[in-house]
Image 1 (cartoon, one colour):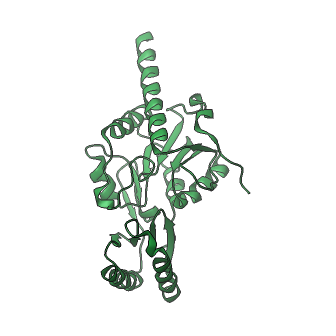
Image 2 (cartoon, helix red, strand yellow):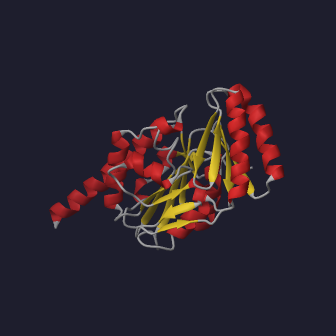
Image 3 (cartoon, one colour):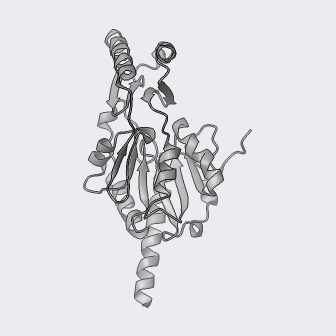
Length: 264
């Protein structure tokens, strides 16, 4: 059994020098609050300012690593533009702007789409979200339907082995392809401006655990936001605590930069 993560307050900010750290952040549940409708999620202005300040201090070595599509992240960050890994690693925009997308089989996704849309028609409140290379079934509005959602997931994957199931918070995602968030972070770390830096990753969901596990190998710093078993080294008690801590870290970086500039 993994050790319980240390409290986030135990993390020494001096370990996170902006010139030597590569920052990777999940989005929903880590930076933005959940909503029954994923399309209605909004990134608070303070968090947008925090990301902007963090990216400036780290010379651009800040990336969003999300289950959302890149276009969706861009919409919510606008006018801020950051490197992004979307759809759990199926698409990725590097620091130089180049976009990588996995080649995916369409037939299994089409079959899953038809089954999920049929289930949603039978049960108002279920939401089918389509992304590049995946389809998500949200049951946040109908939590009592979780057994039916799990059953359709099981039978769909049995019929279409090319699909991978990802369990999240009140959501089941049907993903074509085997790329993961950890694969995306590994790719970023081979490129500028992330190359040669110590990785930092914060996330809140079971879909982030592959990154937490790899962070042990990479000797990085990992933060689990909220409750649940995890391989992360540190835990923030919830999203508000993490966002406040991250805002404080960005302020610390800016104050240090101003102090250095004043002495120069």
